[in-house]
Length: 231
Ligand SMILES: *Cc1c(COP(=O)(O)O)cnc(C)c1O
Image (cartoon, rainbow, N blue to C red):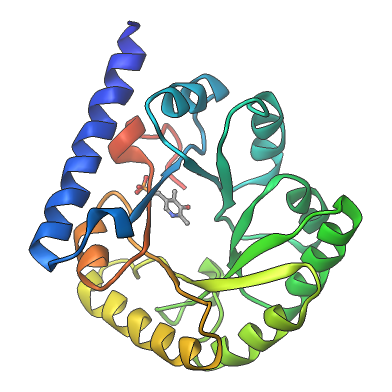
């Protein structure tokens, strides 16, 4: 086994252990929390290692990097998530390979993704990304607009509204932010009972996310190591 394979295996085991412990503390079944490994900045070889180790879900945040990586891993049984801020002119490309776009934060993007999925002959899962701090530069829609954006996604021919995604605001208590997100999800589910996903929690705050009811955690550095360019 290569040194890198050993490293990835250990990182993955440690994260699975953290998820299991957080579930134990929260009285939740670990089978109800899916680990998505964020592979941005890491090569396709690492994606292959992860698939060999039983990872089923991976995520990328830039189309330029993701498109060739997904293509070179086409033989692997993986679900690909797109979690980055998305320009409308990249939506057609992302619609060709992403299974779930977690960063849908405005109606113009819904239309572009729907057209892209139509052209590619595919359906896409979609999450509304919610902004939990006041900073519009970091992506996500205002909590007050979640319902309207949810309606727009649900009305799109080729998109399936699955739930919500958020990143905890820098320098704030993640537990409070995730509790707020869970409350927003409760409201969304009253209108859309199938919008069950709560994608929250990263390397630094997955425990708080699991405690708040996260169904999906997105973990990069705790599995794969520190990225050279933190973004
Ligand atoms: C990079 C990234 C993650 C993973 O972050 P880590 O701190 O490396 O676990 C999760 N979600 C999004 C949206 C990201 O861009």
